[in-house]
Length: 279
Image 1 (cartoon, helix red, strand yellow):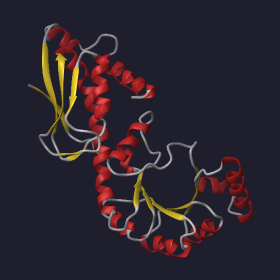
Image 2 (cartoon, rainbow, N blue to C red):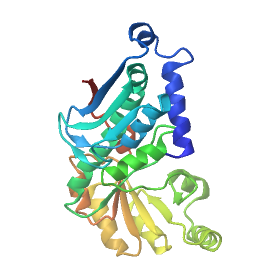
Image 3 (cartoon, rainbow, N blue to C red):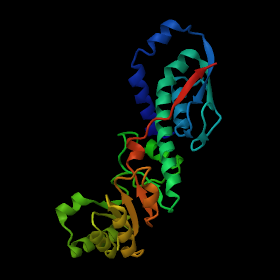
């Protein structure tokens, strides 16, 4: 676990326990009570966040014994025991909800990603995420995408050049201006990926001719995507984005695009049902 994740876990626990702790367990459960409980899947999916859940329990009580029976990226089925925790009953109860919140949310992302990845195999396009993440959770959410078989797009504004519609509204689409911009980037930043967002087939072809690495085909229909890929002729890789669903991702993948980016993976994935059962 990185220091940032540790800080995130500590913040989540403070949110739940404040300075008073688990009042219910403090008054109801004997101080010396010790027990064993199991993390159990209630539905089928792909696991992510198990290492985070473990760290939550150990942050509450370093003497808790946490044993994993599965790993992140493993496919799980209903009623499978994922891990066990043993130690102070009060400590286990204090950590339970925070650990499950991380585990359910991240496993939900991995599970949804795996569904898109399976359907996209029809054409070979790679499923990638976006920056549409919950503030503070981006690293974990993007890790969950990878656990589900997807790939990470840029982590933030700092690790890729992505010229979007709002940039172009300000600076325009003059080829000389854009060409100078690209040359400057190549000179000053070296091998960083340069990507341009295109809303029309004509723009997609024009941007590819400028020598960008990737052309993002924004909210295009199937015919426009096919036409863009055909006319770009491999001069740049292509990425479809906008309006991607489980119902249309297979067809989009078969257009020949290299990447399909989906914000839904991180901003709308339903949590996977996982519970904690005491023995």
